[in-house]
Amino acid sequence: MTHFPLTPTVSANYVDGEAATRPDLLARLAAAQTQRAHDDLLRQLHTVDQVRAPCIVMDRRTLLDFASNDYLGLAQHPSVRAALIDSANHTGVGARAAHLLGGHHANHAALEDKLATWTGRERALLFSTGYMANLGVLGTLIGKGDVCVQDKLNHASLLDGARLSYATLKRYAHADVGAARRQLRSCPAQAAMLATDGVFSMDGDVAPLRELAALCETEHAVLMVDDAHGLGVLGPDGAGSLAAAGLNQEAAPVLMATLGKALGVSGAFVAGSAALIDGLVQFARSYIYTTAMPAPLAAAASAAVDVARADAERRQQLQKNIAQFRDGAAARGMTLMSSSTPIQPIVVGTSAKALAVSRQLLDSGFHVPAIRPPTVAASQARLRISLCALHKNSHIERLLDALAVALSANAKMH
Ligand SMILES: *Cc1c(COP(=O)(O)O)cnc(C)c1O
Image (tube, rainbow, N blue to C red; front, side, top):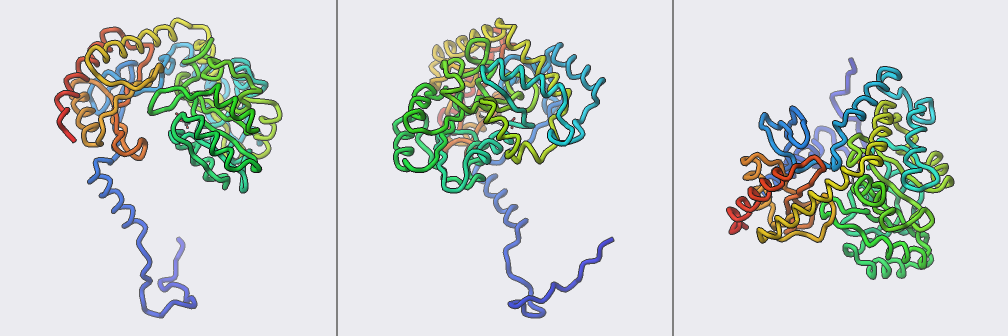
């Protein structure tokens, strides 16, 4: 047992016997928590006991789930599960080490090849999560004195990556290519990256990728696209938003996408030129200083890619579900955002109202979370409905009816 001295060490400005007056960190945290609760912004954990997509048992209630990013319904696909179990039986579970220190398994290498082929890039590199992939790429490519231009609605991990890189972060109004151009023109001499979500995670719209790529070409900036919500869903073969926009590796040199959303597994990858990938292996700290993704997850993701590519019917069904939801919502007078993706938000305004509608939906058997600040802007609190290929016609009709009831019951609320 360690024994700490009972009296602090004496420093220059320490008066013997007088307690230090510095603020208490844990008290400050508790105060922030109280403030959040007061503002209807408190986050709460709910425990999922069972998943039988598109249904879940959460807090012992069976619900139709409209919150999952498993857009193609692959998380429980038999061949994805079998690949995981089979690999675990052969390789064990954990990777045992970082990629560079013996943790890089043949399953990882095979998955990287498959992802590069799918996305039409020269090479790909796995990361344990999308958050880490974004930190790794930004920390490697940009630094002090450089500029990172980003859409205001980009995912938190892109913003955090830019902050951690010490580059100057310049944000532009959502999807506003003119504003992005002004930001780049304001610093013509500095090395620059422009980073955007392919599909915006809380709005569901697709970035103006072709225009941004053209801008990056004339401004000599590197375009990075985070396609977490596009891969598997958009484009020929489900190859993502860049494939849908016809942007190859030259036009969009840095592609990041995750394996935990439409692919139903976990992890992420960066795809691009061999030079980019080699550089990341050398310099991306979130790649180097962490244990490799478990090999069974790589095997499962590999199986998921095969299903996602081969089973076009899942994508078609998803598109039908999106159309059904949008038509039904419009027929009931609901205001939707201009999203053609599985992410279909309904903005209601205040956090209190979003929570009330979400709770009423929960009582009717639907899981539709309220998304509140700081995840979205103040007064932009919303219900984020996410659709998947496994939703049946009747599920969507029932959700629409329940939504109409819950929205009108809370219409007067502020
Ligand atoms: C989910 C998400 C991430 C983070 O990916 P994880 O693998 O969950 O860490 C990054 N970017 C976007 C746009 C996302 O939606």
